Image 1 (cartoon, rainbow, N blue to C red):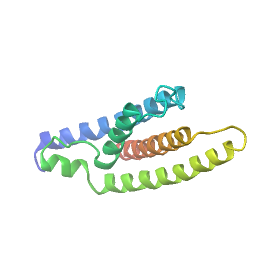
Image 2 (image 1 turned 135 degrees about the vertical axis):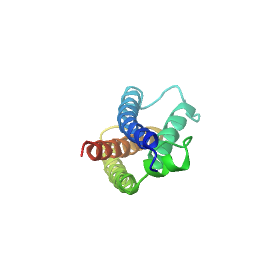
Image 3 (image 1 turned 120 degrees about the horizontal axis):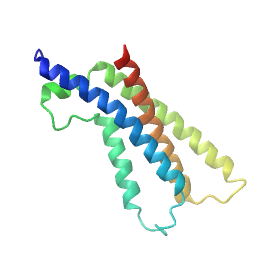
Length: 143
């Protein structure tokens, strides 16, 4: 990994990954907040939601660089990034539990369909984990 151009590329990709993770998570939350019940689905499989969720999970799990050389991928997914990814997933788990608790409490005051509850919990967990990962990565890149 002594090639200077590879090092510059990894630095650029790491910064871009942190920025894009934040932007994608914020957009995901904004879109889901405007249409959490998704009346369009009417009991059918919601393909756009499923695809967007899957894409965000792939970004979180693999961190990008999939179409780069093995050296670049290795440097991009170093030990620090792996620690950040694990911390983000733990945060996502805690957000999932908190979201489920909120849905439980909400169900006493308003009828919450299974579809709405799952969509809310998934949105909070995926976006929260992605935001945590982006925050940790940005903090590390500033040092």
